[in-house]
Amino acid sequence: MLEASERNQIIDSQLELLKQVLYNLKITEQEFSKLPPETRTYEPVGRMFLLTDIDKFMNSLKSQQTQLTARASELEHHKKTAENALKKE
Image (cartoon, rainbow, N blue to C red; front, side):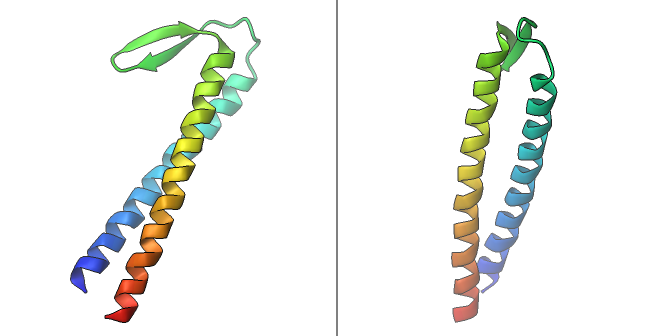
């Protein structure tokens, strides 16, 4: 029982972190959409920055958002199974 509740707390903290990251990505996307298309942008890659056009950068942001929302839904599913395990015990 203790293990399931601990697992549930870990999942909750991971979900909160994912929500914060998704919010930051949303704000970044909104701000970059205001820029003109010819603006030079630098995308962070590890410890360096690569010069990219805004379209590629926006596509990268959208792919990150889809990956994170998929991970969030996966964590929600794990949370529900952990809650069901708690109810059974």
